[in-house]
Length: 480
Image 1 (cartoon, rainbow, N blue to C red):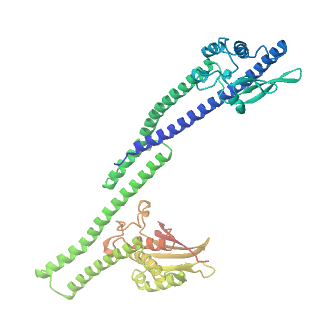
Image 2: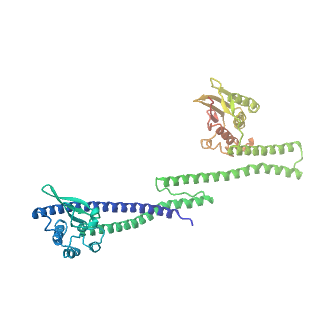
Image 3: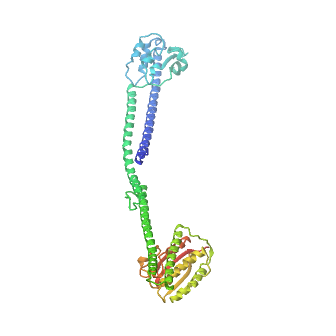
């Protein structure tokens, strides 16, 4: 079963908060326990010191331990007097022990009757003589004792033995600890519930734009390229929405270009085919005699179809990057000069004056394909020959600037409007006033030229010519 992004975000936030809350709870509980234990141990040391002082005073008053020996009531009284933090009311087990005889301490059964988390100090102390004989204590517990000397006039008169174990303090402090522990649990539960609510809200607000993006992507996948996302923030999600909108706009533009491309191809193919069909039907019906002129006309229509299909093939290859480029070091000016000479008859037929202005101080070399470069030059030269008025002029300027070869072809009238300059390199685009089918063009030549220049890491652009016509400017990096 697939989980939604909201559910995953919710779990992520919730688990993260649970880990933080659990860590804080454990740390606070450990810190409280440690602090409380240190407090009790400090008070125990104070009480042990107080008990030693009480015993020292008792010894000073009586001169020996003889009055205390076997007197459990007095022993219990000394234990209670040493505790400054509690009321002097003996526990039930103390009252029972006070009626017993003997020196056994702690008394039998006291551990069970006082069983709790901490052991009272009264059950952990023993009193020994200076020779470590027992006054109050147990023989079997002697190896476990920690001895604290009782001094009188700089002499050791006895020992207070302390059994190991966790000390206990006042009941109120224990209750305080229990209340704090319960409070920590309640606070932790409250934080968990609060974090679950916050995680749910965060998952909703963060998941909402992701859900919109998912829905928009599905719409885009089925061809709804007009879909757009609202940009509501400047963070990564907002940037993702902007990138998505740009991608959708690019796909929409590409789809429109594809539809125009298909429509233009069908239109360009339909026109010469309709002419051919009409001429052939006229020959079949005998309306037009089968003469040399009729065959020449049919041949011209076939050649126009051939040029169109060849241009389409060349353009599709260049779009796919499948045009073969055999690049080598060449002299571009020599190729341009040869192409001008090859097309001289066409310029002569229109009585055009073609002038090549070479501003290069030294010969330059391009790393280029000579055949593709010649195709570029001839396409541009043929355009000028076809579309410039008779008796016009074509100036070709070659120069080098900042490591780049500049070539500009500027012809005379007719010109191109500013609105149409940027579209000249679009396929099938022709300027209606002068780029008509009378010259046999389909509007693919400049698109092919643009791809050839791009394959040589150059740029090509159209601008108004100072002679009144069109100027094509080319920049191609020079091989150093």
